[in-house]
Length: 308
Ligand SMILES: Cc1ncc(COP(=O)(O)O)c(C=O)c1O
Image 1 (tube, rainbow, N blue to C red):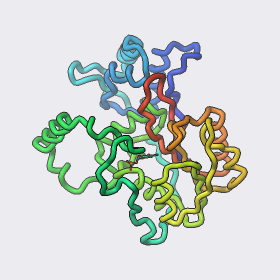
Image 2: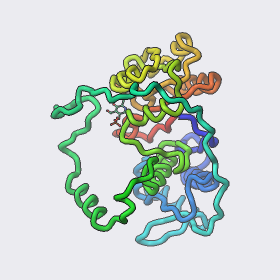
Image 3: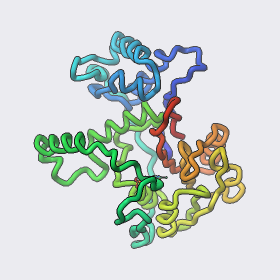
């Protein structure tokens, strides 16, 4: 998706002269200055952030200590560490106004896929190990919420999603995925198809062409076809989407639907060169990139790749 604010420096870069703990400090300061982290908001625990960024705990501890000494963070013991409540609120960045167009009524009816309404078999594409789901923990937390939750949580919710959840997601995305966004720019949906529907309804017109990875995620393809979108297949090789080929086939496409972190279904990562080419094309053509940041959290080693 297009983001309005300037990109935040988020991935820790070992080739930089600046020590990593200072890179973390800079990242937090930028996030606070741009309003992505707000006064009083809780920041991730040292251990969690160290794991997330694949760093030694001491590195994050040093950064937090500096930020605390400089007055950006405040340690509250067992209640965690928060952005200093005394900090002044930054100017709010708002998203660029979207072009509203609604696809033909009825076009967005659900498209049942091969999993829908069926007993899942083991090792199905796109389904995690359901038997490994932490049912006990989930039950405990859900039970606690039900017993203690405010009545508001059982009334009609904010259609964009539960406020505190959107805040946490915005923080998480900033720190872990390099996505600069405010909670107001986060929309919690019921899944990928609901997200695509939201994108279609708010940004697309029926004539818009979509670059679609070939091979790509079948469910998205079915959904977009049913919605009347015009799909332009763009081949994928060992470096991900062949951007040059997309530009050759459909330079004026309004959307590129991509899975750069973990291409679905091939599993390759979009190379840096092609990432730059894709961003360059979208910038020049004024087109939208719909980034399906699919499976980006699943990795055995290495630091997370930032989102496009
Ligand atoms: C490529 C891809 N994107 C997104 C999703 C997530 O879809 P949903 O949010 O509907 O679970 C999946 C799930 O399998 C997927 O394979």
